Amino acid sequence: MQIYAIEPGKLLRIGGPAAVRVIEGEVYVMGKVYGPDSRFTVLRARKVIVKPRTAAKLEITLGPDGSVEEARPEEEVIDVWEDAISKLNLDGITIVLGAMDVGKTTLTVMLANKIANNNKRVGIIDADLGQNDLGPPATVDAAILEPGQAITHLRMLRPIKAMFLKTTSVERVWQDVIAAVKKLSDYLLEVEKVSSVIVNTDGWISTERAVEYKTSLVEKLEPSNVIVIRRADEADSLLKALQEKLQDRVNITVLPAPPAARIRSKEDRRIHREMGYGKYLTPPRDVSVDLKSTPIVNFPICAGMPLKQDLLNLVRRVVRQNILHCELIGGCMVAIVPSLQKKDPEILDMPAGGKVILLPQGWEKGLLVGLEDENNFLLALGRLKKIYYNNSKAIITISKNFTDLSKVHHIRLGMIRLNEQFEEVEKVNYITRLENLVLGKRGK
Ligand SMILES: Nc1ncnc2c1ncn2[C@@H]1O[C@H](COP(=O)(O)OP(=O)(O)OP(=O)(O)O)[C@@H](O)[C@H]1O
Ligand SMILES: [Mg+2]
Image (cartoon, rainbow, N blue to C red; front, side, top):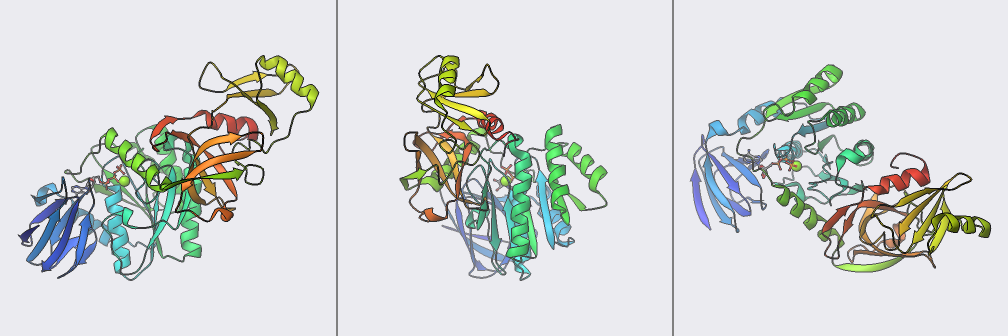
């Protein structure tokens, strides 16, 4: 534990983990003023800028890898950010956009603190599938910051509603992400009656597709504000597209990225995700789910129709190997066989038309699944362990903390395979193809 004295005009940069208590004076931290005897924490791998409003004394306790250093005002953006956001009317929706590690999550927290500090309820949506700070990876989550509350990190809030997006690869599901963010923002505004919603996004902005995604998101949400955090020229094509398409409909603010922001490595990002899955699946317990009454909506295996004997014989002739289970799902036959040469399913044409999808026994082992309510909101994540075709049961590992199984209306199959330690071992992108084949539509 150490005592630090700071004067106005100077800035302190605290790297987490750290616990801070203000002994005397007032400091400004992420949109909130902390006075004598107030406290805040800085989480691991995060940096927070402390700006004294008066001469101040802080007591700082650092955890492993925590740090305190003086930041030179010219290398900091806090005043520029503060100036720009204090001019904004934050009623309605504000979307924060920018590349990776430019401070989107930090700005989201700052905006939320500012609004709550004005005695308003503010909704926050984290739409970053890969580096979600509110909920688990592969989800979009909504939380509320109540009037007067302040946080230094999104992880301090509990999501009140979530949607499962199946993967952390936003480029595969961006249309669904837009629908999920819209649904959650409608919920926050209409049901929870918040006055403002802040939407935090992922850092995928540079490719043509990414620009299409982000501009479509803005078009769909009709926000009051879009804030783009700009580092070098990374956001330029996005900015150009936003200005061309939407300038007269939304207020676009451009902010500089903090030069001292910590760049997270791929490894940091993977660890963040894995800690995410584990947190939501432990302490583990296995449950048995009847797939007839609680179907897998996007691939309703065990909820299809049995094949008539003559059709089954025909399928046997086409498949030319032992069939362990076969059923008709949507317009497609699905057959489980002992093994396949490749990892991906094999798709065969039937002589009289129609298709057979061949899946190897055990194809389902380890797949991330979402347990959802009748409105498609996520109730809990699970790890699919095994499907028993003879009695249509799935064994799913969920967290013991989730007890409301009666609310589960259906299951959604994800596109990520986890091992028994809940570490991501594979992206199973063929799930989209299965959905398309049996449901005959894109990724639903
Ligand atoms: N003004 C600042 N000075 C120094 N470091 C900062 C500043 N603002 C944020 N950081 C740190 O930089 C890192 C990236 O910030 P943040 O997580 O807010 O960015 P992001 O754009 O949300 O990143 P991601 O793409 O990973 O979601 C974090 O460790 C954060 O604590
Ligand atoms: Mg972020």
